[in-house]
Length: 335
Image (cartoon, rainbow, N blue to C red):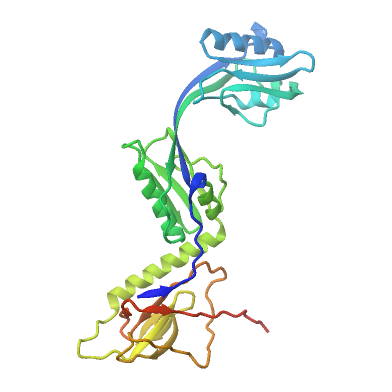
């Protein structure tokens, strides 16, 4: 059966189609503040800290501009390396971030002496130096733009990763998107088009155990799909198959956005019923007169699912004939 449908599908392509996978190799080092050794003022604290990492052959150092007392840092690592500094030091320098790739970073503001004083004498300050492998993975094309299909194709895309032992699985249940991995040294960033579709932060980094709420319309659509699948399963188990000698007499038009009604003691999302002729596969036009509007069971409709079945609930096959469906909606007026 060929059916005319006008469907607008956002294609996940180009740079918006790329999944980013980072494998992280961290190394944690620490520095101990010691007022006895001269760490009572920021300048001496910075000097001793720099010597500490220089002795360890770590290409990292804090900097200071004597003229305006602003501070910064230099990290001369390789392109795929990073450094994560303690929050108290980031606050002292007046940085609004704590993780840095190789480069020179300067604050234009005078260092925060109050933030420095929160660093206790004898406190261990942990610095994380790491290397990551970044891998760009194209996401599979999504044929049907609904939440379940999108997440399924996302998971299928991970089967093409370079890491044969890496298992990544996303799950969407109602309004919660969760990520499960078999390793804790891997980070994933979803394609920007997919993040926009789900209504989540495009820069969100997913690790093992990450969960995030999706936008309400996605959650509603996912719940409706689950309910429809449960209904279809029940239909498959309970619908009687007509004996070959019994002719089909009724054509039922089912539409998934209307509530179930009972026909022959079976629940169907029934829009209309009409008589079924023996030559129903030939060219025919059916006008439902008078037009009867049925209540819609949802507020946000992105796609519709239409089925044609007989009075036994069996799908009708129209062969290769073109089937055109016109469905009309009107606003609901409240008294």
